[in-house]
Amino acid sequence: MIEVRPFAQLGHAQHGWLDARHHFSFASYHDPERMNWGQLRVWNDDEIAPHSGFPTHPHRDMEIITYVRQGAITHKDSLGNEGRTEAGDVQVMSAGTGIAHSEFNLDDTTTQLFQIWIQPDRAGLPPSWGAKPFPKGERAGAFVTLASGYAEDDEALPIRVRARLAAATLRAGQQVEYPLGKGRKAYLVAASGSFEINGVPAQARDGVAVSDLDVVHITAMEDSEIVLVDVA
Image (tube, rainbow, N blue to C red; front, top):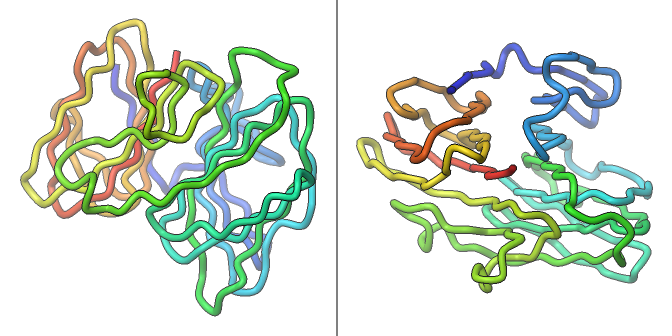
């Protein structure tokens, strides 16, 4: 099964400093047919105006991944962590028993990012945060795992769920495969460019929900940066 969710049909919230698109029900956007995709609960496509951001607020029992598409985001939390995550890089916050954090765009240009929430396999664990740079050249022409709940993915940021976040940068005409398995689900979004997935076309920032496929076959129709989440 492959379902394309066009960008224009996503939930939309305009807060002035924040222009947000919601792939799944979130805040004031509610669609009973788009509550989650397996353990994937949230995929927000956010544009944050310069010198603005999310003031301190709490989370618990959620794996929260931030993939920065353009600009940078600065994180501070109640554990004392502070870090700046730039375009192409990833940060992971395991909310666990509870954590409060803020995220601000301190720069003079708009920050664009995907914020992805995955429900953990276990609740009540201690909170944590981490970030890591992933130079785009290292994932040219192939998917590279950026965050993972599997021990064998030892170079990825750890998450507390049997899931993966992967990304690939492809030149026009390049093809890549992702071994999914029929018992798994995937959700793909092109941060830029356009692609075909098993022959089905998708444009930049569309969501593509996939299930019941052993292998996902992707062809870039133009230079593309593709982000994929693999969940149960």
